[in-house]
Length: 247
Image (cartoon, rainbow, N blue to C red; front, side, top):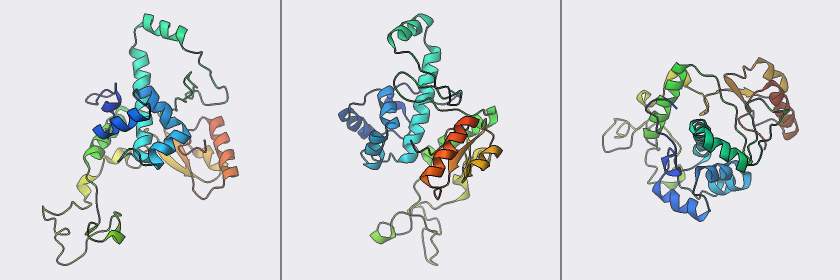
């Protein structure tokens, strides 16, 4: 973990965590990082948490980020564990099953979740990702002018254009508007939260041009289910991570 980054030891240490989340998770029987990871990697529970909007402010983006952070924290915790304690845990825990067809980084653990493949990043990009995460955490929500007055406007962003608009003129008592100063580092702009550079693909042949060490693919939304399975199978053969797998 990079310097200045908060160590994740409990659920309350997670980014974007709110106190009100604690009771909701407790009611669901989730009290540890392992239990939360199992819930987020289970399709039914994931939909219940994110789709059901049980946790206020936790959408798909935050949930996916939590999975990445928890996996990293659990992996580091296992590395720093004393040798005797590790051996004792190995004896108690069920044997780890290694999937031969999957990429080297994808190992099925005893608890049922899959450790996803990580990118090979330079120190410069690692620091840039940490800076981007910090900027994201303090970036305000950009709301459309008079979103509070007319419900039909919704919360989607539109630039204020009125000649007398106080919001357009950056008056302090009005909501902030999208400005260049809120942007993240250029080096990792457009990167996935895992650190991979996203590449959009629509057929298996496009996978040949992808670098599995630094790039991950996202299958286009117009691709059919049958073709998507073919793309995922070929990606597994090449050791490429698919960000939006079917299952």
